[in-house]
Amino acid sequence: MADFDEAPKSGSTPAPRPADVGGIAGEQLRAIIDRIERLEEEKKALAEDIKDVFAEAKGNGFDTKIIRKIISIRKRDRDELDEEETMLEVYMRALGMLPEVDEE
Image 1: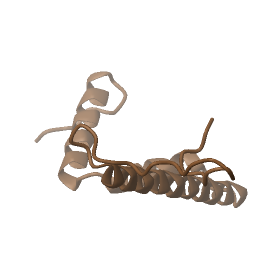
Image 2: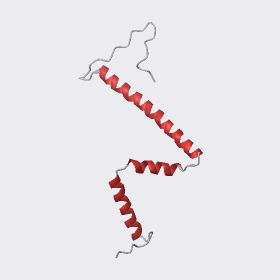
Image 3: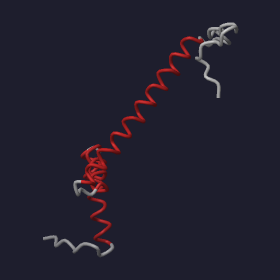
């Protein structure tokens, strides 16, 4: 695949600069795309770092599935989490998975 940012080969004419075409500012579009590509590279590097930390945790005897669950819980709104836990308890009681609560 050709790299559009490559310097022209010797003896060839330089590549034209992106121009305004159809109302699109070429330089601005190139800058936006370049930023997105850089951010995608950073995101990939961060994902690798996170993977390494999980591997370290697993190597130290921690259950990474539980760590992921804790991270998921910590991201959530407290009220939303409380409501979900309440509904989970109600459903589990209805299925006989938890003892009945004595209401006095």
